[in-house]
Length: 281
Ligand SMILES: [Fe+2]
Image (cartoon, rainbow, N blue to C red; front, side, top):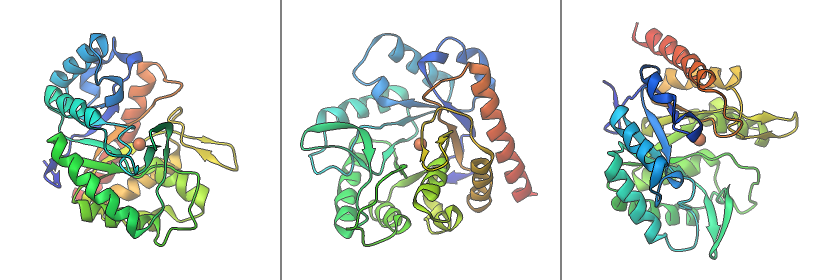
């Protein structure tokens, strides 16, 4: 089994969503691992928690959040971290992740992932907070490259340089969202392959795959459709450089029937096995 930053290759998994609570356990052999959105479970009892704990006994589990707000100038939310750590323990999660962004400031929740300016000041700020989060959660922690729709004049480095500085400085993993790379590259006019080449690929502990909406002018990262062939190609190209990386399909809007979700996971697996088979052969 290949380990990246000491973490195992889990194969090809899907996000655990309420729409599939009933059926997914019958398809256990078509899913290698699951990812749970922590905000859907933390602090709640009832069915979401019961199903999450059952899933944790069925598959390897990783946790993923959207509300940590690692880049915010507000203090880290201690109650949130406490609930998060307790969920890590209850599920035996192998690692946890959130986005390199901020989603709240001055006490206001934005319900959106806002990018940080790519500056030395932001790097130092996020490194310190990431180290705190890793210590509090008690499991390895990874930051995800978010999709973003604004850029700051204040930035003094590229997005890839910013990611590298944060990841190396905080000594944490990278959750590489390949669809986000494609979306950002199109929206901001850069080469997605050159971007990936500039990342510290030895730190990639997980990959996200998802669909998006392309209106021809702007691409919106909706997680509401099939993964397009260009993103599958970029995924293959990435795996040729990284070797095996646990790969997770995110489908959060217009959630399809389970068989469609599983077929999508199969399609991603087919790409991964083709590339990795060729690499090892
Ligand atoms: Fe993602």
